[in-house]
Image (cartoon, rainbow, N blue to C red; front, side, top):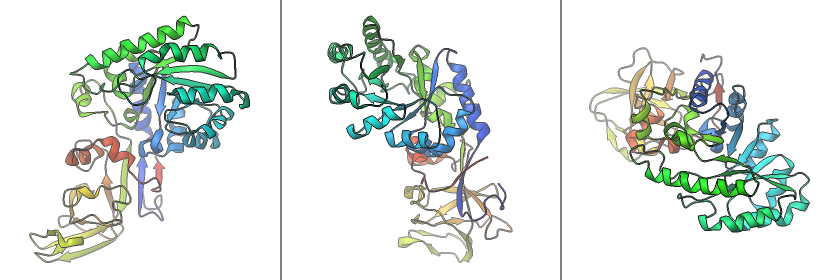
Length: 382
């Protein structure tokens, strides 16, 4: 991106439209044509901008959007997005009617929530679609196996009222490790019991269980719909999945974080850098300032460990990372000037300057690294 395009910005995030389309096509190729695909865009679309990402991926065709909260769902509707939406997280009772009004489906995972819907449905101006969440082994959200009869009794006695059981779903606890499929297979079997019981009652909800890793590793888990999140952004759900499938599947990271050089200075050998003077220069060198820090989402734990790219070359982070500034070693960069571009996080997964590289250095999940990027940084779709 040239200087005119980034005018007025000290830091920005570039989003690769072609990479989004590529990743979506990869997952579409893994599922049956009759199987729906939900794009999970919660948490600011994993750091990629909720509204912008939803608009972009809609061009290639998805069947559903998955969000965490009714607030995210309402934001999408306010921007005119018509795609079906499912709230995967908890919805406060006072927000339920808004979901019905805006054609947003809600997850129902407790008797308290189900009974609230039943008791208050007469107040809904439109019919509310709900997806029943069942706990088959994750032991987080969801009705337990022994709850099946009671859940169905409540639904059966009210199925002609102002709500509709549009879906039933579960979540796998350990689908990211292909070496240990047993737990996932057991969860699938328990989920099939739920689906069969619902069908015996004349209900035919959309059944969905697989997230990104399940979609890639367990074809039998696709059911009626898959929920793909991290993979759409070109990131692998786990190192084990990448090791198993990287020769068969190509994912393209979508996001690159950029900034500029704002100050350059020569420093003598032994100069101590930054807060608490934690790092000394072993030789005379050149230090540059990049105007980002841990407030922007660059992990403070990368102090004296991280690297950024300047003119295609790796430049080490020096000393403590500050809230809004980072010092880097630019000794080997020729003809550097204030205003020159810096790649804070790039798209080459093999580089320590990538989302995956940073996560590997710190032994973090790259889900955590990408979703921590400050939502106030401008996302530019290219």
